[in-house]
Image 1 (cartoon, one colour):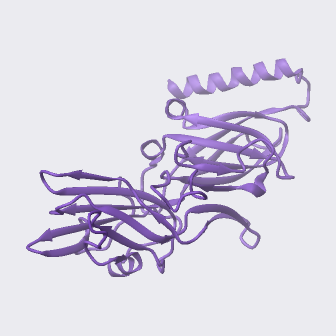
Image 2 (spheres, rainbow, N blue to C red; image 1 turned 90 degrees about the vertical axis):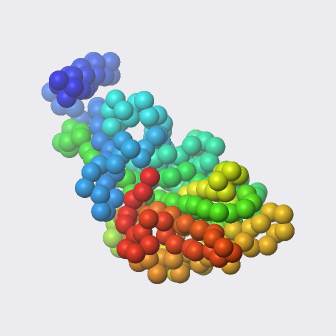
Image 3 (tube, rainbow, N blue to C red; image 1 turned 60 degrees about the horizontal axis):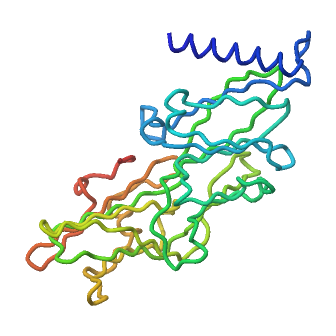
Length: 307
């Protein structure tokens, strides 16, 4: 029944737009047409579509062949719950559609998504990345690009699958006697979509090196438990990134700096671009000793995903 209503709505809206545009004729050549983009998120290793679980918001921009902007739109969670996609009414022609999921105004600045900008300005970073020595986190970003042809001779129904744009690093400290400060150093702080002429596809490139991420730390003084989570632009297995746990009263490291590359190698964490990566670091303090592991996966390979 829901599918019938959705189809009926699209048919009626299409008829209405044709009437309003004066495009009722034998041929639709030159007439704007309805186009439906359906959204999915199926990272490698996931049998299910995770879009509804992972995505709170989608921002999209439609670019003309010269790179200028034809259309911009923001879809909030309530709209995505009604239709896991978007219906657009576009002039016939060829376009490139760029989409970011979960980009909030507070934690993500999108380049190429403002009037006067073009597809050559595409980028994403934290709003304070250029003015602050450290940033707390990015949003948990997903990314997609699709070519789009709007024509009476082409289908108006397309599916777009998102890919992960960030890696989540979380820290869980048990038995820590002070509320620590967490620094993750040597990281890239921005993402730039780049078109690969060889493969004909778009890829995300991490840029702006040597940034420090300083996530907020929640501390339970009674149970001496601390948690911190940050989302960082995707990095490679040989990242120079280091996790530093610091005693704020002395400025000293509570444990020696932890190499992310070392954890990736030790726990065989897969880092391919189409895999959703979460690195949950657990540090347990007992009798003056600290045990550092990957949470819940101490004796097995880390699997993709994680909430």
